[in-house]
Image (cartoon, one colour):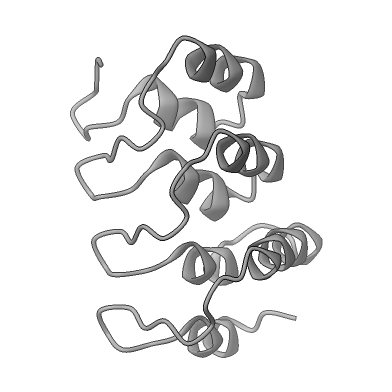
Length: 124
């Protein structure tokens, strides 16, 4: 797969910029949905951090791994609670992750759980 200087592939860009038709095309064409960029971030991580719920659902439906961690040891739930989009989108994403049995006790590399990050960031 082609990638840019940060190791990001078209799959990453579809997730980052909420391009659902492009993502669907890539998945149907057999693109690797698990590919990591140079920071160890997957398309599902990017979609979660950006609050792109439709992309998240599409990747989960395509069987994207939900237990991956990026370079700071953060899970999808960590990223969901620290993202800087509006509170309604954040709640939708976090609820979706919790419904998938995301573990609230998982710790990142600094030993912080998603609850620590939610309290620190003021998630409502």
